[in-house]
Image (cartoon, rainbow, N blue to C red):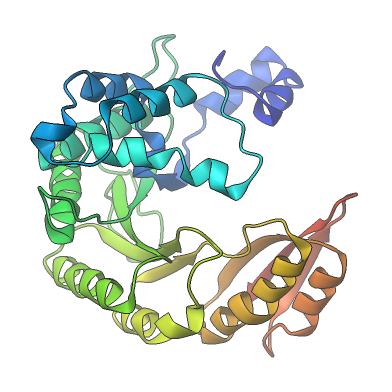
Length: 311
């Protein structure tokens, strides 16, 4: 666990060796893993060794890729939201072909399911992996998604199924996929991806939901309600990244314009977790949908987390 830093390291230091052994022995479900954010550095470095932007007809230079990898090798400072998004162009460039994408996907799955070098068990028992289909000079968004799904289906052959379903009437598969829609996409692209997802879902591939992600300052959720209504109609789950920036004024805008329409949209229970400050938290609770319940808060000097189960 020497690679764990920050608050996670502080939490681990408070545990006894016996407690750590017990926690590591428990079967775990990883429900929020982004494929592009989980690629092991060794895999990225290996892909970078053969990266040739001119041959691949890509605009990101080899120097830019190497600079991106150097940032990942050190402790990355994420002080502003842009610091996070600047890390990804280099990663996107390295997985611009189906072969590279498949290789990266296997690396991610190995990181979650292979036993560790110290003999400890795998990171998780069940994985929901989310990814945004990207179009490159070498693959369409459909080819991107099919590459990830085919790689996962092949990998599943090496894993035993779950001993019991994780939910009512759910299969015993160990890996599922959540397809992400980036807020910077236009509606036509979102519709294209959702149509592909629905077709692949009918073919029995392991897609369990649709995610909204990307720069929280981009787009207007009201423009996409019919896209997600279509997803809900076929029984797929929906996950949202909302209210992820810290500026107080923008929090208030997000809570009143961005979050609330989605809470009204749901018919089934949804667990919403947001970090909000002072008056914004009160505004959120006052505008929650009729019939909601089980509202809890955690206090703090700079703000509080609001948990709301909506029915």
